[in-house]
Structure formats: structure tokens, C-alpha cells
Amino acid sequence: MKGLRLTIAKHTINTILDTLGENDFVNIIAYSDYVRYVEPCFKGTLVQADLDNRELFNTQAQSLLLMTSVAMPVFSKKKETLSHGILLGVVGTDVALRELMRLAPRYKLGIHGYAYLVTNNGYILSHPDLRPLYKEGKKLKPKPNYNSVDLSEVEWEDTEEKLRTAMVQGQTGTLSLDVRSSVDKGRRVMFLRNDYFYTVINETPFSLGVVLTRGNGQYMFTGNVSVEEGLHDLLGSDLTIANEWTYCETDIDPAHRKLSQLEAVVRYLTGKEPDMECDEVLLQRTLFDAVVTAPMEAYWTALMLNSSSMAEGVETAFLGTRSGLMRVQRYTGIEKRTVKSFLTSVDKENMFTLDHFPLWYRRAAENPAGQFLYYLPRQDTRGKIVIAATAVTVTVGKKTAIAGGKPTFPVRPRASPAL
Image (spheres, rainbow, N blue to C red):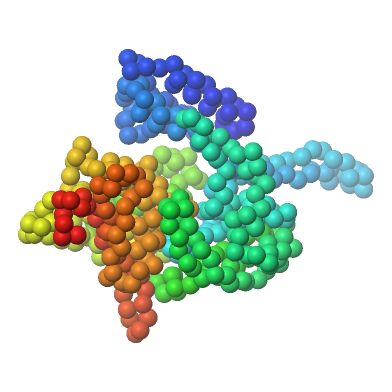
């Protein structure tokens, strides 16, 4: 469902949700090629239509996506009409920009790297700093000029507009700039040296740019493990992978669309779906990371049991790798947790997404290995929790690479003065 019918459907769902109260029970079923529940966590049951659940469904129904429309004329090719150029009609389609950006895998771009698209007018199609929506009450709405934001408004370090001019003219080339990159919604700044690579996309009015940050991603640490060994550790209860990344294509076959990325990877590696298209390089790195990080749970559990100073205060231990793998060990129940949303699916800033690495990952990577970074998360406005993070590196022959592991832990500082 697209266009006007999709808009009407979303408006209808939101209107119905607004009429429900705490004495009502609700769930939403979507249908395309198969029937599915909008929120799978409720496992097909009706749930109380309280404020939290209504907002959850509202968010699921508000899936606004930036799209670009492409079209071309269709002329008659019959011999008797070929010379007259008779126009039969126009064919076109809408393409979600997120699907285009999946062609630039996040793990290849590195910690601070990104890809972006611009038109031949210099307007942005896709960019990490393009924020086309604003929140009005409970709803997300597009900004008035969301489709006419110039490249110079987000890459403002390009003061002489060399980058913009080259891309508008459809050139291919490179450019280096010293930039100040804001993170944590503008609360913190990182000073980076970026290399820009750009080229025109043939037979389109668009140009593609790729940005790589010096000092990150120059060397990558890889290793080989057997599929059997990797699968065993990949199925740990404390392990997740970036569900917005494409480890395996789940959109081609309708039967695969209900699979999470982890489920798709497991089915491919076990031979249940041998024809599924998967990124072999990313899978190999993910399996290696799963094996290397497998002892994390036992290590942290033993440390907590043997150290009285660590027994109180530590809420969560977790790490992440460049392959999008995360291991999370919780030491307190959700009812006692200071920031309940931290490292959950709604906490986009601290998770691997299509647009960025987690905030703690990016900040820790800018510090020397072994040096801990301490900061207060934005979700905690009362200063009752501290996040500590450090980078883990591997050096071989004087060449250093970030192995991807960032052992980090949120703690309540009053309860754990040693930290």
C-alpha cells in the first residue's frame, strides 16, 4: 500500500487509537503478502489500550519514509509509428531512500563514515544530518522545506562550496576537510579529518558521496572460525545483531520478510535457506566476533561475584563490535533499572542503526585504547547514572585496528564510588 491509500490507512488507525481508553484492549494486524502483527512483542494477544501501548502503536503506524520518484516516457516502437514518436504513456515508481542507502553498508564505512545523495540542484536526497520531520504533540510531521535542503547547509565546513559545485556539475573526485561533528543531539562535538569521495550516478540527476574519517577504518581486524563454532556462540541469549543492517536479504522472497536479521542468518548458515542472498564478508566477521566475545558473560559474572566493590551500582555490562554485534549483560531487573530504555529497541542513539554506530561506540573510539570515557546519558536528567566506555584495539606489526569491543557499563555513582 502506497500513496493516498497508505495515508488514509495511517490516519484511520491513529484516529481509532485516540478513541480508546484504559478499559479497552487492542492489537493491529497488517497485511501485504502475508498477515503479521504490527508489534510482534505482544505475541498476537490483545493488550490494554493504555497511554504507553497507544503511543507504541501510533509510532508503528507513523512510518514516514523519504522517497524519490523516478519516471520515463514510453514511446511506440512499431515500424509504422516509430518515426512519429508517438507517446504511449509514462512509467514510474517510488523508491524508499533507505533502500538506496543500504547499498553502502555501515560496517564498510566505519565508525564516523557515511554516504549521502544530492540532486543536480544541490539539494539533499539523503544525509545523516538531514532531519526532515518534527514532532507535533504525539505525531511526526514533515518540515515545510524538507525536500529543498541544500548540501551547504549540512556540510557547512565546505565554506568555498568546492564539494557542492563539483557534485552539482556531476564530477568525480575527492576532497579533504577538517570538520566539527556534533553528536548526542548537539550536546557534544568531535573534531575530525574527513575524506570526501563523490561521483555522479549514470543516467540519473543524482550524485553519490561517501565520507571516511581518518584514523578510523584504515585497518580492520579479521579472523576465521568454523560455521559450527560461530553458530553456537551466535545463539547466546545475551547476543543481538543490528537488525537495520543487511546481513541477509529478506525482502526478495515474501516468505522471508517476517524474519529478523538474526533469524535469517541462522537459517542461511544451517542450510535451511541456502539460496538466500547474504553478505559473506559481514557474516564471517560476525561469526568471528561471536566466538571471541563469548567469554564476556562468564567474565563479568565472575568479576561481580569476586569483587565486593562491584557488587552494587553496576546495572549493565555490554560491548559492541564493528560487525554490528552486541552483547548485553543485565545485573538489575527492569523495575530497579535507573534508565529503563537504555539499550532497548527504542534507544536508537545507543544502538547500531542504518545511519550510525552507537553513541558510546563513536565517543570511545576517539580516545586512546584503555582510557575510559565517562559521561551522563541524555535520558538521565537527574545525574543518577554514569556510562563508562573504552576502546579495545589490536596491534600487529605497529598497525593498530579497533577490534570493535567496547566493554562499557552504566553505574549508579553513589553506590559504586570506586568508579
